[in-house]
Image 1 (cartoon, rainbow, N blue to C red):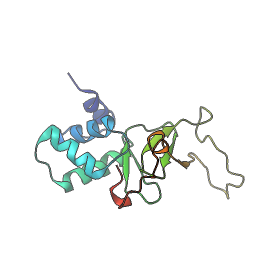
Image 2: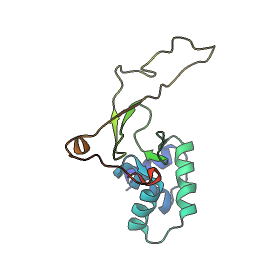
Image 3: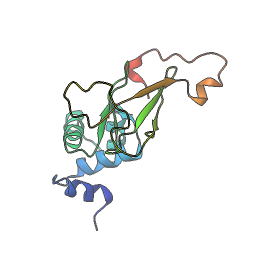
Length: 151
């Protein structure tokens, strides 16, 4: 019996391999994970796997449309398995936490450009910025010393 990840790989005409299944499951289980987190979660499932193998799998999954790569300003690349619905993101300015924000309308794109310059627009990407509930209750703001290591 196929796992959900194996079925998604087959539907995308990708060969089913243990690293691909493990990476897809890691991204599905940990939305907005950075590459280092995906590597860590993949190693928990498989044991040893090289950084390069995970990077290659992430690239293949992104190209196949099974995962989406996002990179808010000041952050490392993040990956999510929620694809195809044109949702947006809200990012905490203090700790870097990311959450999904559903589109205001059902179809993509949910925003319409005042000028399209002849482009056929099929997606709008919006990033909202603010302070997450956890950081807003702190008496002193959290400053992450290295924006490259936001979790």
